[in-house]
Image (cartoon, rainbow, N blue to C red):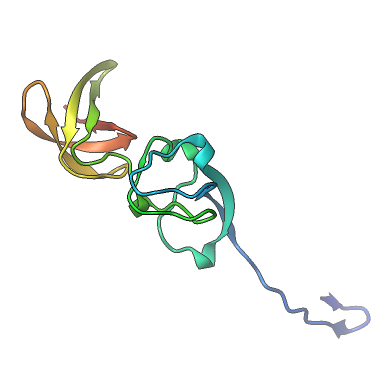
Length: 142
């Protein structure tokens, strides 16, 4: 602080904390458990103490499967869940110019949103590359 007319200055120590909203566990979560809305909460987390990839909205994790045990209050990180899990059924979506096609498939590996994974089309038995777009859902370009 400073007062120029009286020519004095005071230095005040401050500690800045930058927080961001992230999804944390509201209940203990066990490996293999599917996340429900009651299992998670949005918490403000100190950015300096958290340097990994977390989730900012509950919709991104509800329905996902837990890969490891998570304690109450812990941030749910992207590597803690599989949005699309290996050997599980997924919806394959393809769309262009207002036209949309969906079919069922089987994920060949775990994946998080935005990641490219291999998916087996259950009708044709062809293995295709698809991008994870949501819980149990992948998108292909055609």
